[in-house]
Amino acid sequence: MPEKENSPEIRIKENLEKENEKLIEANFIEEIDKNHAIVARNIFKDYEIGNFIVRAVEDVSLSIYSGEFLVIKGPSGAGKTSLLNLLGGLDSPKSGIIYSFGVKISDMEEESLSTWRLLNSGFVFQNYNLISTLTAEENVMFPMNLSGVEFKAQRKRALELLIQMGLKDRREHLPFQLSAGEQQRIAIARALANNPPIIIADEPTANLDKKTSKFIRDLFKDLKNSIRTIIIATHDDYLINLADTIISFDDGKIINKEIINNNKN
Picture (tube, rainbow, N blue to C red):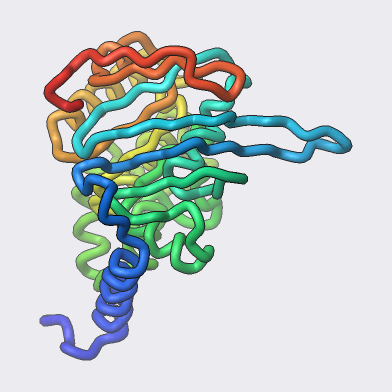
């Protein structure tokens, strides 16, 4: 049955697209090259833990080109997750500025930033962060539902991704019925659901069995050949070897930057 012209799904999607256009118009900075997926300038991030202030990110400046595969490596506790959250708009810096495709996102209001994330970034969390009351299929559909995609199109896209992940037969299972590797694959499918230009992944192969790790490594190898920008925090040598750029990160700071593929920089 064809989608009705004034269906709620279409209105929501049109409103989101209009809001995205407004965000771009209101926040676009001329001097920032739109070919950069992300530009961070002198960003800091502190957290209060009891009576202490912990500096997780200190004076980081970084430019990431559209289509670049960037790896952030460093010891546990170095601040890699905090940096990913800032670059993806999940958190805001204490000071400094972050742009994405020429749009200033670091001081957006939360509602506007949520819209921006929904349309531009897909996140793969180390602990999966699946919604426990939703099935595998519904978890993949969730960001599309928020974007106002028509229900049949949501299911079609979700099924395509579940087949790609080798999990078609697990689509009706809840997260607790899935293995760690299956949950991670669902999380990746969810990240890809809205076809965002940026994918951010935090230790995507950590604590997984060899078979699942290989599957996810091969998947990111395929994603490297797409037009997406990929930012990964990882200790995985295979994923590190896929990188166009490698950032060594420790104590909240960039220690070293190694450019592997000059064509992306």
